[in-house]
Amino acid sequence: MKRQRRSVCPIAFSLDLFGDRWSLLVLRDMVFGKRRHFHEFLESGEGIATNVLADRLNRLERAGVVEKTPDPADRRRRIYTLTEAGLDLVPVLLELVVWGARHDPATPVTEDFLRRVREDREAVVRDFRQRLSARVPVRPSDTVAPE
Amino acid sequence: MKRQRRSVCPIAFSLDLFGDRWSLLVLRDMVFGKRRHFHEFLESGEGIATNVLADRLNRLERAGVVEKTPDPADRRRRIYTLTEAGLDLVPVLLELVVWGARHDPATPVTEDFLRRVREDREAVVRDFRQRLSARVPVRPSDTVAPE
DNA sequence: AACGTATACTTGCGAAATGCAACCAGACAG
DNA sequence: CTGTCTGGTTGCATTTCGCAAGTATACGTT
Image 1 (cartoon, chains in turn yellow, blue, green, orange):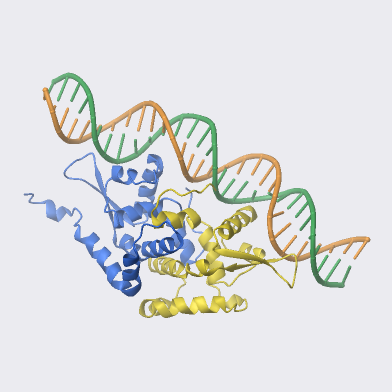
Image 2 (tube, chains in turn blue, brown, green, yellow):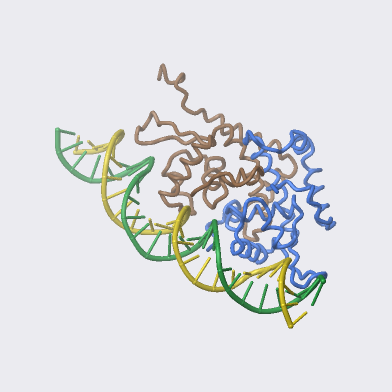
């Protein structure tokens, strides 16, 4: 993936980094799925390839959106976490959820969640940020992603 | 661009449609640049290729995000406008602007605009929607008795 | 009516990105 | 020491992209 700046537009700047079919799904897994390990990202239902995943994680790390640290509990593993810049993507992801849910007739997103976002957007964003910076342990039941 | 549904996730649903480097730039041109013709999209600084542009416009039209109507003033032209589903993307685009502006040290986005978005987000969204739907698209009923 | 130009595409082709399977090295577990 | 887990890399076929050229229809000018 060759990606250099195409223009000074802030949207183009954003898309130059994560404007593809996979980057935001990996970030979604970190935000909503609370995944942190390579193999956990692979397990998301969409089936990303290992080489593409490795590439995206490196790219996001170089861009300062994701941080890679060794796992003290198992030296084979690395822990991928969001930086502050990564946490700033929560609103982007939320709007993608809102649009997708509204226009997908078969969405599993609950009306309740959408109402919360509509009525108290700031609180929802704050909530996700806090839960992530507090390093809440992985709870599979919280996942929005498939399987 | 082969794109079928990868999962039930609303984010994946969104990205299956416009998760690439060009779709959102075209939509940006419609929302912020008020462009409506094929050649206008080509003139945007990023330099999209004609075949890719044609493909994206068709894809967005089939998805019901964009509408293609003949231009009564020049029959070579078509006018591309946003549908309601397209207007629903304004919040997504705004968040991309916010993220891009915050993390691009050389952004041209004014602090004033960012403050408006922060402080009265709903109003900004409403504003763009209105300005766009005010540009009344061609409606057959309107052309019955031309001036 | 004839001619040049504008517009919205399509086509063809080399280059890049993706998807898939296989392979590999370092750690861990028994 | 052996087998397995983890996080990758490598190689290759397929798909998509980027670029240049070509085409069909419509317009504007003379």
